[in-house]
Length: 163
Image (cartoon, rainbow, N blue to C red; front, side, top):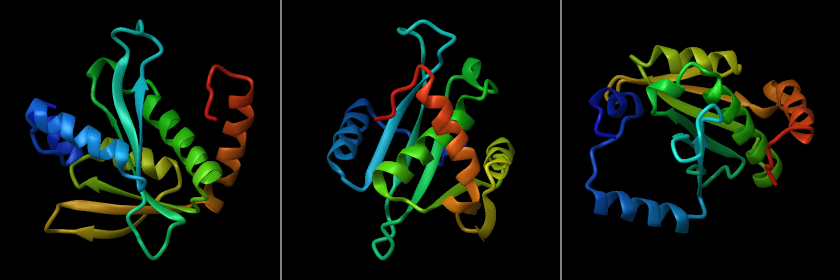
């Protein structure tokens, strides 16, 4: 996270090592956050960690909705379909394990690659923040049902274990 371009794309602040550890501890204990580390299967295990995918259940009035975000931080792991695959798997997990029915993504105005990705997944623009320079996208699980069911069928016969 020392790369300023990556920090801007993910709306992240630079953290000291101790702050990073503290953030990780708080995430592990927060029942309203869910995060999975992404691995690039084209790299060996010791070099494969390339990003993360996260869910935030932050609408206390609607526990069936969550904010979702993705980060593929390693440039050599980008543009391989990892982000799309991880988002679909995370949304399937959220739907089946957490009862989620709606996903919201907040994406920086300049992050055109991420905007294209979420649009491919049927997310629609629902708002803009000039203060934070970001666009809010949203999708109902019903709009993704076919893709998620196809993914589930594929996962049953694949190398993933989402249980």
